[in-house]
Length: 132
Image (tube, rainbow, N blue to C red; front, side):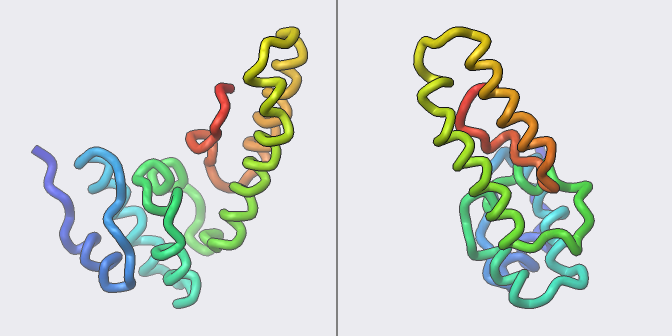
């Protein structure tokens, strides 16, 4: 049985954060990561944004996948900009990726999305809406 670290949960709750989604084991690990980010030298405005913007910030997966990103890079607007760039690329290529088209064309579109993901500072691959 995995126990959630209540200290990490309480820290996030104190700053207005909500519980993370995921398994009990993922939540415990992600809560510890999130706590270390929000208790680092981040500006209070960034803490508020990280904890209240919702979406991927409320998933254990996001925090675990980005555990090696230095804390000072956790600027919500930067993360959202990268995520919006990914969504724009997916929308641009959606027709090619979901319809029956020549495989080479699909692969070319997938590669463009993969290259974008590789250029991001944050690991957003798990939040990609299309199969890569």
